[in-house]
Length: 244
Image (cartoon, rainbow, N blue to C red):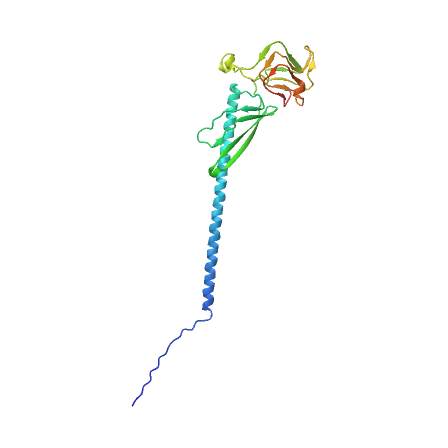
């Protein structure tokens, strides 16, 4: 009797020692790539926000600058036409913003003394961004125009009953509707008001005299000492920036 034996062989795979290391390395590289990608995305998002803020800030600054140039143009027109009286420390303005711009027109023009004035314009951009520009203007008299309505080198006295004002000849003849408060008076004197009617020192405004404008003494003088007001001076007393 023949007896046969059959054997079954089972093959068991054996992992090499470096296979686990490769898997761990691949996972680490994947994690590193995810971190790099996340960092790049965050950096890009931050840069986009910075760029957006910069652009909106520039937009508001450009609108503020455009507003400042617009107000300067309007001031020149109104001063030349005699429709804006530069009297007092705070001069009311009523300029409307033109279409297509985003700025707040100034409500007042502030006197800084010595023919110097200031105003502020605020521009608006997206995301509630704001930019403010403060302008300081130095008025200069053009050739062919009088700087003062009345001027005395060492001084002058105003007596009797009289009113001094200004008017714009482009608007027709002088009249109540064509009279303005731009009749400035001035002197080069810096000495306290005094002297005589023949040789006055400083400026004396009599009790029945009205002058619609500002009064100027010489540079460095004290306007309150040089200009005596018993009547009415609608403007302010100031020291001129330069002698005539």
